[in-house]
Image 1 (cartoon, helix red, strand yellow):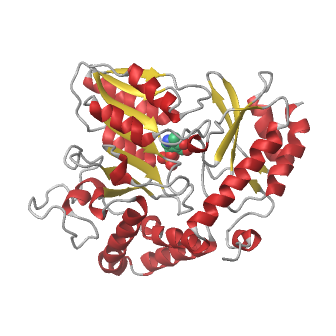
Image 2 (spheres, protein in one colour):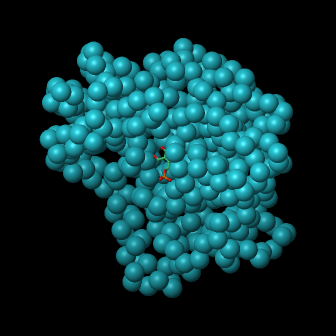
Image 3 (tube, rainbow, N blue to C red):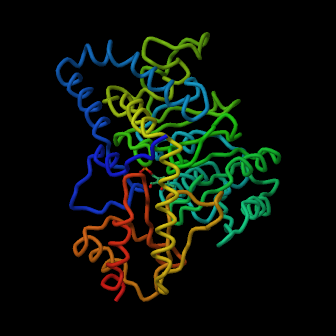
Amino acid sequence: MEPLNWQQARAEMLLDPTVINLNTGSFGPLPRSVFARVTQLRQELAAEPMNFLLRTAPPLLWQARSRLAEFVGTTPQRLVFTANVTTAINLVASSLRLAAPGDILLSDHEYGAMHWCWERAAQRQGLTIRTFPLPIDPDDPEEIVQAAIRAMTPRTRLLFFSHVLSPTGMVLPARELCAAARARGILTVVDGAHALAMVPLHLDALGCDFYGSNCHKWLLAPTGSGFLYLGAGQEDRLQPLQVSWGWQHEHTRRDEPDEFGSTPRIRFLEFEGTRDPSPWLAVPEALAFQERLGWQAIRGRMEELGCHVRQRLGQDQRLKLATPTHPALHGSLTAFHLPTSTDPQILRRRLWEGHRIEAPIIERPYGLLLRVSTHFYNTCEEIDRLVQALPDLLN
Ligand SMILES: Cc1ncc(COP(=O)(O)O)c(C=O)c1O
């Protein structure tokens, strides 16, 4: 097979040419074809809302659910579309009943807003939040599993962790963590915000109870697309965030596709009243776009760019790599500890105003991190521009 021309592939993205976007980890930009698809759908919605919402959208919604399900290794009956992973985790945390007294166990690297979801759940249900420290620079995924196991007690009701950590990009051994929790009767909820289209996913084989993710990051689907996966045996444990027309439904044939592009069981959780489903309906085009380039080629390209980041930024003595180099423990987010003297506000301003570089400066209790995302559309030259800017940024 001919090697892909990455310059040509990049030209298929809608990118502001004046910006160096090293931040797919926050929000993915759109391929032109995905933008065209979502715009076409919105045009149809605008022109004839009744026809679009009642007749056009339902079969497209089922198609989108099926395509996404196939990609993530499950069946459409297990996927609830959401606006984002925040909604997905809230769906679980706001309604899952856990036996009190007891603990909700989280890693100490969780995304702040998700940590709060569990704090509220704990407050409401008389439970305690406990965090366990992840190993700083593990050489082996098993070290992470052992760290979690050491923190599990007979009082632990639920384990929540990110599949890919937001601050450092470390990839956690999700399957092994879920197995360890399950063996102790502990439920698992996985925050897969960054995992979709960054690491291979097979949700039915993962063994989690619930898994939430975003389509708007590495999948490069429109803002407003995410999902919640319901694991085997957990189909009936949640309540919707909004009660709407899915509330009262037929209790036979609950997993059969209905006339709304859902199933009665899914619609119970998913339907929130009138909303624009176009971002969900454009997910198949986002999948098709990266499939056309080839997942294997994309993964190879991401790994190559990640190596370039480690090599080039790693040469600066003031930066210390925060992402493990073990192949199973990193994906396409690479983070560096910044010198303690760094002022985050000044650094953010210099990055953006001085160099038009998008790369987040993340504040954690243990210090500041610079995080670099590398999707296929990035280039070695962009990474080199960040390296060249470092003297100005850090002095
Ligand atoms: C690990 C993690 N969880 C949750 C979120 C929240 O994502 P969203 O705002 O799309 O719901 C993010 C956002 O970057 C994240 O990194």
